Length: 219
Image (cartoon, rainbow, N blue to C red):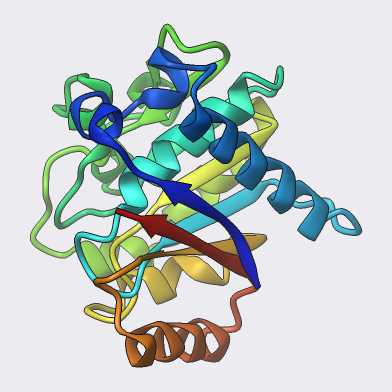
């Protein structure tokens, strides 16, 4: 099912955190609609962790994840967004924060979960960046420490969003998908091929992930 469609614009390209900088815009309202539709889709479950991915690179998943996290935090939820794309992280650039310490440091035991968190000026939203790009991202994402990190996050936050690598190129996202309550697939109109979207759906289902639906970027 399609969760919603995001109509992109010049505002989004110049200011990727449009849900924060322009909360009254049509685009921000579309993100609020996505947030509400996710809630309705999982209404019978106590779902708190959501993975955001896409079939391939460059389809807008990180921007979608960031704005969705902002929209959720504006609803008085305490939200953590985690950059689990350990190969091509983007959230630190989107939020304009340092990435010297992050998820990779937690997964190798170099720092604690709470010491790696970045507080933001956006409502009750915090960010856990990827940290330095490791040599063995797939191995780190299959570590028991990842499960412990997610468990720790749920003790302090109402909702946790995870921005991951695109699902068809590497195994990284499959390692994460079934550890989350739901997965949102982001596709881009005019770029994502139908066969790639269908293949991504099958891959997620094979990984025993719960696919909530699809967000269509209309660029």
